[in-house]
Structures are given as structure tokens and as C-alpha cells.
Length: 208
Image (cartoon, rainbow, N blue to C red; front, side, top):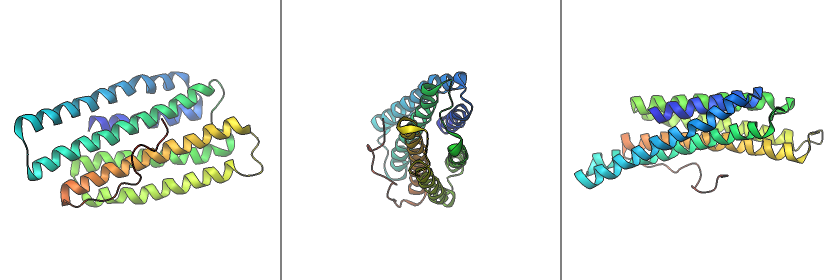
């Protein structure tokens, strides 16, 4: 739960910094990513200790395995929020998001926040139905990413290649953040029902 709250706050602050060119908020997001990494390590340590000392089976083993997988998704969500903040910092003091894209990025930030909040609720309630709803939210994020690319590729784009690359990467960061939220929700569905679901995208293909 601490990880879920931390990565939600991180992306909300990163989006704010992106839209306001606020250097202080950028640096805060980047610094606090280490806290998420530390929580991830603590989860891993507890999982390995539980496996070694208690040799869990059946439902208990499922709980332990889903715990470490959810923690990995949350850790990556924190990294992606950090990437957004670093993009804003790289452009500082100029805004990283041109006026034509502010509405889309604002919407992507809102969807990301809603999904991260829902992950926290799913972890608290173990509500499989709520976890499944994350896939619908992810469809909204995918639509926003397509809208962003349509603006970047339009003949009237006037901000040059460097700005286009930055904005394309921003769209990717938000889209992957949403994918990891879906994966976390699917792990809760597995925990509750014992039924697996395919992840939204194979691991290891997102930008560093």
C-alpha cells in the first residue's frame, strides 16, 4: 500500500511539474524514487525470507508470488514517474509540453492518477471486479496516446524534432504506467480467483 500511494503521488507531482515547469517538484520526484526502490527491496526480502523459512504452499504461496510481482509493477510505475519528471527538468526553464498538447497530457495524467488510485483500492479490498476495470481505464489511456501521436505527426506541428521526440516519449511513459497498473490489478484477480490473465505487454520492452 505504501508503494501504491508513493507511485500515485510521484506521477501526480511529475505531471504538475511537467505542465508548470517547476524545477523543485521535478527534483523532489526524482529524489523520492529511491524510497519506492527501497520499499521494493523490502518486499523482495520478506518474500525470500517467507519462502525460505515457511515454505508456503497453495493459497499462501500464491499470495507471496503475487506480492512480489505487484511490487515489481509498482516499482516500475515509480520509475516512469521519474522519467516524466526528468523530461520536465531537461527542458527547464522552458515548458516541456507545447500548448497544443497540454490538454492531452493533462488528461493522461488524470487517467494515470485514477488508475493508480484504483490499484490502491484493489490491494486494500482484493476486489477482483475492480481490478478487471483497470483494463477499461487502460483503453482510455491508449486512445489518448493515439491522439497525442496524431498531433505530433500533423503537418502543422511547428516545434521541431527534439520536442516531438520528448513528447512521444512522454506519451509512452504514461501508457506504460497504465499498463503496469493493469498488470498489478490482474495479479490481484489471480490472487482472488486463481485464474491467470495475460499481461498487457511482455516485460523488458519499455524505454529505460
